[in-house]
Image 1 (cartoon, rainbow, N blue to C red):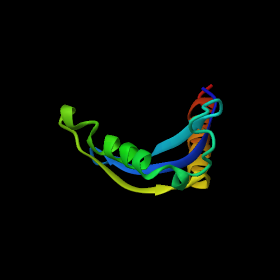
Image 2 (cartoon, rainbow, N blue to C red):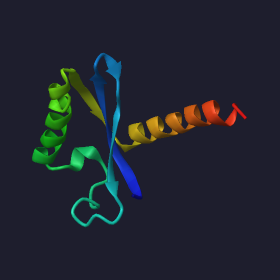
Image 3 (tube, helix red, strand yellow):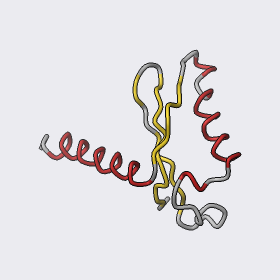
Image 4 (cartoon, helix red, strand yellow):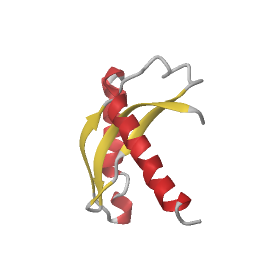
Length: 93
């Protein structure tokens, strides 16, 4: 699905950093008016936060949502991950 980042949720999953990119599909008429996570309606924002705070409870694991960043922060994480991927897999051949 082609999408664009509107933010990042910084979280900890079982003691490890596990950032989540919040993105919007380009063709989604309900959400494609949003370009920054801060523009989301508060109930949508709270639903996302609540889901990631509890989604691993049944596995006996703990998660913690720390804070949020905007689309520029999300893009930096995406590019950093692409660089790490390229270093790992392009240098091994």
